[in-house]
Amino acid sequence: MYSIVHSREIDAPAELVWEVITDFKAYGEWNEYIVACESTLEVGSPIVLKARLLPFAVSTFREIIYKHLPGKTIHYGLPIPLGAVNGVRSHTVTRLASGKTKYESVYEQTGWLSFFARLIVGKQLERGFATMTEGIERRALLLVKQRENESKSQS
Image (spheres, rainbow, N blue to C red):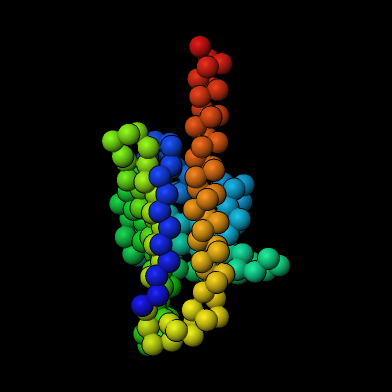
């Protein structure tokens, strides 16, 4: 099995971090890796991702939602027939007692061709998932500031 894990403590409420993750229409504004995304988030339904695996190319992936607990976690993946490669990605948001949020991104890849898939796209996946994690944090912190400023201007 091949795994990529990114975990980050974000100084923003869990609801806001979840909003960033699920506001697919805004991905193009902040996400350098997944530049577009569409899904209803219903279990069994598709999630269509446009990923920038290389600086000059965007690839489209149609994956399946395996699990969705609103406000907490999403699991989705792209199974390749015959058990050749199965990649499952999850985003998990946990509210911390401090008022901050723990965000965790996990990608697990299994299957008899997994080793070769890792050789071909492993570095791009690692870079992309790291970039997305950083982008989620930046976007959440920006929204916190914007909403604080809106709140002050309404007072």
